[in-house]
Length: 264
Length: 250
Ligand SMILES: Nc1ncnc2c1ncn2[C@@H]1O[C@H](COP(=O)(O)OP(=O)(O)OP(=O)(O)O)[C@@H](O)[C@H]1O
Ligand SMILES: [Mg+2]
Image (cartoon, rainbow over all chains, first blue to last red; front, side):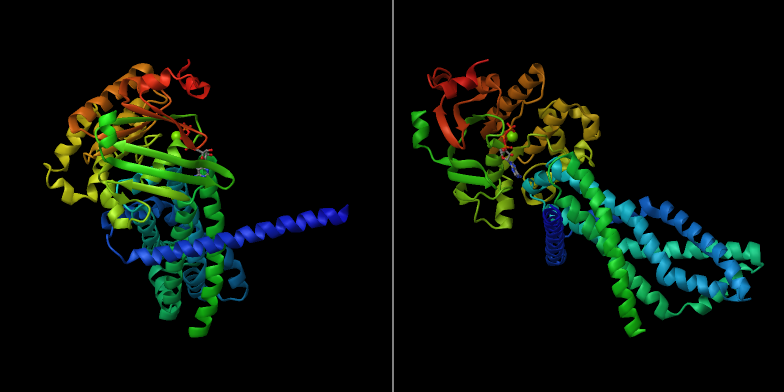
């Protein structure tokens, strides 16, 4: 009995693992198709600009508010500990380094996975299900170029910008706390921030956020474009897009930290 | 009928096979569409009619068989050539398939964007779009979104979109399904007018016996994945075969 149960469990786990890796394989092929088609004409510049505008515009407020609260809370929580060691003057450099190098990019990318990634999954999914993608193909427009490439390029370009903006607002939030609680002037605070930050902090973080953007666009498009039939499929596409993106973001982050460690 | 036998078909399907896993949908379907005729395909729901037309425009790759349109083999055709050939084909999707993030105007302009060379002969996109909408009697809907239209209006916009490049061959996948009888009649009349005006060849998939009676020159019944019976509306409706009779009984 127990043996039978164990066998059943193992086989379900095995099939799940297999389909997981099959999916990773499909996604790699999808990425391959992206790189094959992205540099060949025709280019859909108008649609690319529209996508960039939409993504930036839709996430601006969310990223701003998240960044602000992040900086505020982070500073408030760290103050007592730093004060115990009499190290309040390190506040600016500690906060700026951790936000710019790690917390800012990861948190903002996760927010954008929920905002942009799931949106792409749902939009392309419903276009697939209602045959709009087929209709595009029939009318002589390559839907992969028009829908997928524009979106992946747009997320890749926009995410670094959103992250830089979010980081800046987070530091502003932190400066406000320091100004109110620690009587540090804004000028002094930002002088300390710029003293602490080096080129080798900003460059890896920006490169990393380019990859974050690519991951969000790629997985969102993959899930939506290959959506299975039916409205259930659309929900499933947008939902699993967020799950996969979140996992992928941490994997990329992990790799990025290793690589950064080697070079800087 | 006999004179058509000598004509060359604009579209020919030979021995088409398509399966989805264990589900064998098409098992050797044959079809010829001659110039200027209205060919009606009838078949039960799920018999593979939509799969068959999607094979015709290259949306689904058949497992076996050949498809020739204007003497070109669709299956071996490259992407570029296929796109050029597709400007000669209008396709009305079963579910209209309007782009719901675009206005009616943008929907109609979409097929034109890749075929600027073809438009140069015409008077520019604006006039083309207006003319296409006038043809379907929806001139005042030009700036609405598809979600703001009723099902019948969506179908008419989709029809206008399918016709905007003035294709030689038009494929209608169930143009009247889900519409009330009056709107359905309007759509049928519209299809007839367009056929007369531009002398197109049409492939019409339908369940609707009235529609078939009004519009068909010839009919094919798709049963069990093959062309089960063929003939004019009168011939088929007077057939003694119970499988054929089942389509015409109410
Ligand atoms: N992409 C697909 N994947 C798997 N099976 C499919 C796919 N498309 C169609 N089928 C199957 O093929 C069969 C025929 O479907 P099709 O849509 O052609 O029917 P139809 O004759 O157009 O029916 P209806 O009149 O209801 O539109 C169905 O059994 C369907 O399950
Ligand atoms: Mg169908």
